[in-house]
Amino acid sequence: MFQYKDYADSADYIRGRLGGFSPAYLLILGSGLGVLAERIQNPIYIPYNEIPHFRASTAPSHAGRFVCGELGGKPVMAMQGRLHIYEGYTAEEAAYPVRAAKLLGVQTLIVTNAAGGINTGYQVGDLVALNDFIKFSFPNPLLGANIPEFGPRFQDMSRVFDRDYIKLVKQIAEEQGITLREGVYFYATGPQYETPAEIRAFRILGGDVVGMSTVPECMCAVHAGMKVLGISLVTNMAAGVLDQPLSEEEVIREGEAAQDRFSRLLLAFLQRT
Image (tube, rainbow, N blue to C red; front, side, top):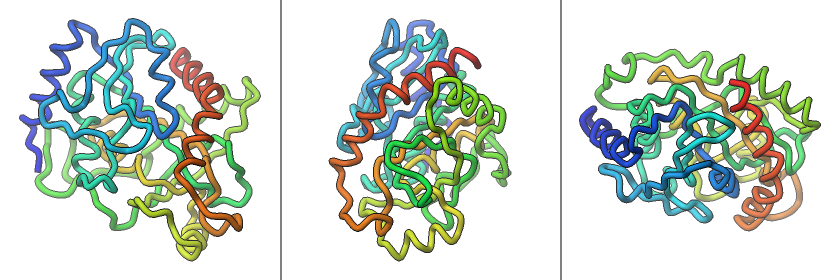
């Protein structure tokens, strides 16, 4: 279990590398979406494996570093790649960067991911503004001794995703002619894709998209008092929706195909918040 001092050590190291730059936004860029970090002006690169107590990202297409600078006129720190439980990390380790970012002054988390489409009204390429998630009893980053410097022992999770942010990003999408759904993210640890029977159950329970990330980070962000915007990219229809196998290559390919739309949407959001 991490202690408050561990997060403070990490934040102190990052702060020393930033040379006075103070980020207000943390962007977590999912599979195939890390290209947005390449648009950051005056970038400062900090590999995760150089930061005390951090873990290295091993997921395909994840660069495993922070890119800090200005994006959309706002001071941001972007994660080119995240940590997943399926890599062998605990939920606490997967969400660790969020708490370190909070100690740097970050107030807003923008979290993106590649996801499978559960809702049969969706199609590959759709963007989905998240309004809730379903986790059940999967690993929880808030287990163990509470760290009161971040938040309370029993955290309210009735409004994980900021409603004003959802309203704004939907307005921007409409202005730009981008299809943007709104739905519920169903969290599964992976690394295997879900079975068709699991997807049928998830749909009955109210899931619209399914993925292997995002939830641990969001839980720690809300616990620490941060505002959260979550957006999924449907890179494949979930198991059993279409009569075809799922593959990692499809996820990466669709992520790259959506880069322009995704980037325009997030840049406009930053400019208007």
